[in-house]
Amino acid sequence: MELTLKNKTAVVTGGSKGIGLAITAALAAEGASVVVGSRGSTPELDVLVAERGVTVVPVDLATANGPAELIRAAQEAYGGVDILVNNVGASEPAESIVGFTDEQWQRIFDVTFFSAVRSVRAAIPAMEGRGGGAIVNIGSLNARLPAGMIAPYSAAKAALSNFGKALSEEFAPKGIRVNTVSPGPVRTPLWTAPGGFAHMFADQAGTTVDDVMNRMLPETMGITTGRISEPSEVADLVLFLASDRAGNITGADYVIDGGMLKSLA
Image (cartoon, rainbow, N blue to C red; front, side, top):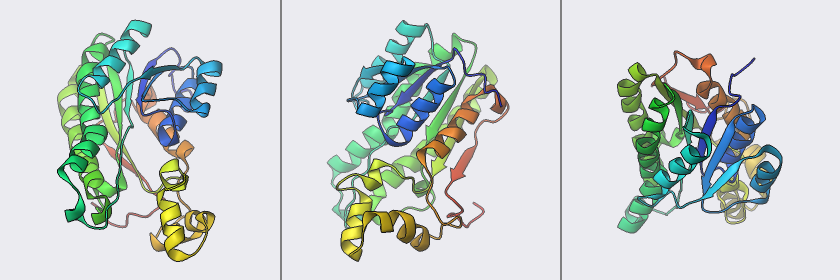
């Protein structure tokens, strides 16, 4: 299937690892000019810079001016923006909801929600100058299934889903489509890196990280397919929604969770 992404300009926030890296790689493979906003690079992202011409803008997207700086860099390099993927997010677990400080709530919302608000505010004029565009927000199943230990993250993702709906209502008549992709557990460094959730659960259960990722999570979370999602699978969905193949899809929120969510809402 031809996705018609060649020569499009795409901006990805938090594209140095995990889902963001997979989206960056997939967009570049389709011929898009990709601009990544991240505080730093990774060896995997460096390869995409060298082999695919990806542009990395070192920027703190949690700051008031960071997102506008990123969009400005994309405009200066490519004359506009066609696709914006709001992927960057942050989560800090705590034993209880009441254990989160004001500073933690603000920090998580700055990264996970306000970075998207500010990126959209900067990108909309750049998209209008191109005659339209596509925005894909990376939400989370936790927006529907909140958990006390990551309450600020869940709340920020719920706000992001609501924001996407509002955006789609206002800007669809102007040719700018806005959709949300809400993954369940995905095999990313958030889980697998030292100190990640899988290590924490493995220590508690007296087992290995591989056992947590391949058996415990699917079983305890009721994942019907029996496995968690891969970053590339999330990226495939994002690319479809960003492409002209999804030309009349807007205001939607797509869950990719292996059947974990059992409700109709």
